[in-house]
Picture: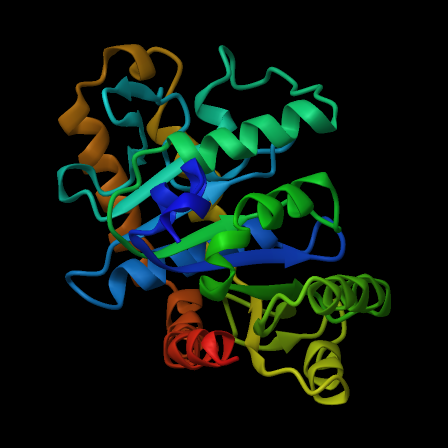
Length: 303
């Protein structure tokens, strides 16, 4: 009913699917998986429109990974304009508290109410427009940010689903179980589990070393009757790409670069990602997610 609409639901009614990426603990590569998911969804179709929202308010890393650090957010008559990673093509929109900081090294020391207000503003005031997918990178664990997201998005709950990221070792799996328990408590459909850092592929000889063990995420998915989306080994090429993305900014260059130059640098990042082995491994994961989303939406709408 129209009377039940909220500023958030009005803004998000043009977004077909919202994917919340979460993890039980920090350090499992959740943000890099979120960035890869957004890039791969963008590459899935020449018309796919994707947004990525970074609600890891105290540790925003998405701007750096996408080569957008140093960009600012502009206000329009229709709300905040997100930063577009693909420039004039405007099919990959990004929003993060990192764009709002005066200095990239400034800390965000906020209590729960201020975090809640910031998330509400991200959801209600950002001019996302029509999106096929909105990927939300969340902080590790199950905290205020997760509860705020679900509270504000209650009226579009039928379009929400989650991806859980873990690493193979036992400690990470224990925390991933808590994350899975949270999704069940709040009735958030889980698209599946991704096991990140599953082995290390030597760039010289191709030999795989199981630095953090392997297979734990798949075993957990099987025990808990949750889809296992796939394994992603440590990819030195990807690490270099995402870490070096900020190098496109530079201290002086940040202030002197023209908008078209920034767009070209970011577009090169997208093209370079497609040449990594991680992109090849992420593609079948994204194919499964894209095939599952309509089923999730359909089952959520049944009485």
